[in-house]
Length: 295
Image (cartoon, rainbow, N blue to C red):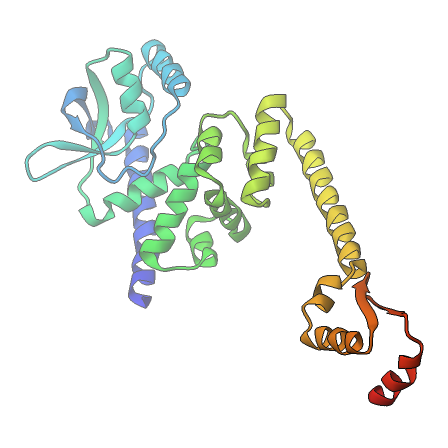
């Protein structure tokens, strides 16, 4: 386990350094590193952790590339079959294809292929436009693969432990809520409120958010009312339980039944009502005999 932790520490530093250096080279006097590649000859990154790309976002970038050109090259490596495989920049590649541009600026990187997945993860983690679900899954993959704590991951990617923990909690939401979050039908603010609720309550609040177009503040108010209502209901039920007649318990007690049968032998009618043993003595002469038996 310790060996893996060390590998992550060196790996992330090296990854960030290599990617950063490649971009810096492009903007300095090393422009010979940038080449034009046919977009159709670039294979996707098989380890791409980003599953969702906003159509609107890709469309906007496509328009920008058409007007101003691609400002930041993509990163690729050449595999054993002399094919180019994408390392970073899938959104840029998609936007370029959408703009019907046949070639794209790229930097060909020589690298240890064992780092390919980590590069994809880190590149996504550092993007501000990454949706919260893909970000949470990227955190989860790094934690699971390297068997590290939230604190250790926070130090390595320069994030707060609280931010990582809160982001990972989003994965506890139902699939329906996660999809709505990805589709931006609800916000991250809504999700943070929902994740603190039970599954049944999540559904109730979600329907209200979508149906009534509730803001985050409105949702907080709704949840507070829901919790206050449940708390009051719990208090009422608790009070009722304390004052509930234990008639059922008395009826099920064999000794009570034995006592009732014994009293009936002395012609004393006995019954249980509201947790009380009620005697109907029609023959007073039997009272002394009963007392004698009971004493």
